[in-house]
Length: 190
Image (tube, rainbow, N blue to C red; front, side):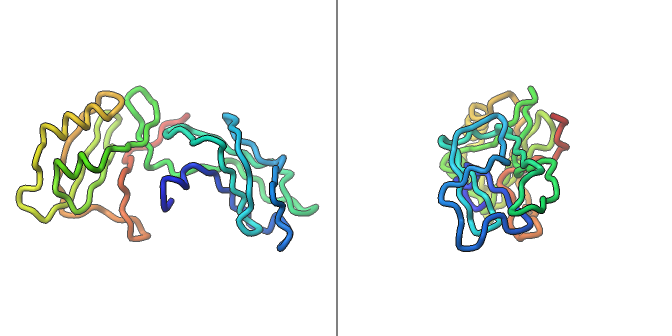
């Protein structure tokens, strides 16, 4: 995702054209698309292979939605391979000690006021532990550890062991980008 706004839409990419080129329906309402729990919204096509569903209201963060595409989905009499499940980026969602899912959204201003960092990452390393990893060029980058810890504990919805750890580098993904938030433990069965 390039922005948080993209997290508020569901994109389904088909392996072949689903609508005729040049004749994309202005308001598609495909009967083969289902989302649970049900949410109101509208559809649009991006080209002939990408169906975009935009909810009428912003989706709450850290909420799981299951999208199902019926086996009958097809542009013509042929049918597409059946999708079992469409999943979003789950590695950025933390699993709280209660089992509830949560997307960490800490305020950047508070972080910048407390630590002088070049890169920062929030990593869930255990069910009850979060590491705030940061890279800095300064000898003494932490300006207000007590204030930072108080803020982090208040902004985290359940009690967790929070550690601030200075690192030499933050690992990057194959794309060259690094994750702002990452869960480094297995996803429990839902």
